[in-house]
Length: 187
Image (cartoon, rainbow, N blue to C red; front, top):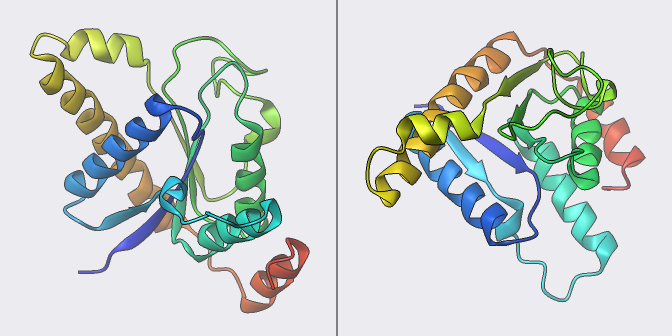
């Protein structure tokens, strides 16, 4: 079986981000029967590294992944996540933009609730889920079962988007990849 590495891009600042990323990654791997293996930057060993070394390590992991998931939750998408997205699009990395925040945000609320400069890229799919509605609709069980059901449901939707974006993705030439690696000071 062929498996694909999914780079997780999103906030890593508190226990909700860290544990939420982990739970979603587990459910993605289950929903895809192992076809999608998730790489969580929060699990990288960065002890003793400079900020520049951390950035390089992060972008190398992104460039080496098969596709990427960008979490665009919050009033405005996290600036580091947006930087990773633009880096990914510079090499036409297949991507899924994901928002589970039910609040309004961005310039184009109905189409994609984030800044319009992050929309319209090739080989990019979007998934917007109203997490409050989902939580309430699935929250008729124990808290642990609800937690798992919410993440499982989102994971199933994301796996569908991953399949679409990979099916339609264009190949990137080695020359473009090398050029962008130099542009991002990765070599």
